[in-house]
Length: 265
Image (cartoon, rainbow, N blue to C red):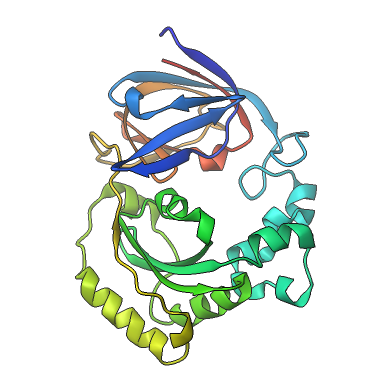
């Protein structure tokens, strides 16, 4: 192993250019991961964790990378991030209105994706296709566009009576699922939306997303740096925010945001 990088890791960066291209932010570097597939890599957790907001050293993270005070007070961890229908930025209420102007009071998309099951969700216009890739979706389509996060949340809540809003991560990684008739799915969801939200519907097409995977673990086992600080194995693929390894282990990088890690290959 001749290459080594060390520092705080953050969620995987991705771009959709045919096959998803991944890179790992570690310290001040970005390590391209696609060329490492089918190669042995070694990951070593130093035991140190830092908040990605205030950079204070902490013992555990909240909401994937934050210390408790930042989790409690930072706009990035507001309740409306997970439940957009609770957003009140359009009424002038926010932990940080300047932040909300950029992230809540801008165009928001309601989308449908397939991650082993059909699901619906909300994301900012600038987060497509990143949001879909982070979830491990193999197909996705924009359904509606709204001028703020609250309205998008209202539509999502309405659609949740017909569709899930969650990804089953083991099913997503396993690839063991049957695909529905996506054209019919789009027709069906538009019928639901036509009853109350027709003014927000936009014409769109399904986007196909392909991941760099050579092989999938037969029995998926979650890897945690807290329990296994040093891990060495052959990288066999990447999907969503997960690294897939030959010995049936998978590592959720996003879950370990803020951890100080060394990667060798």
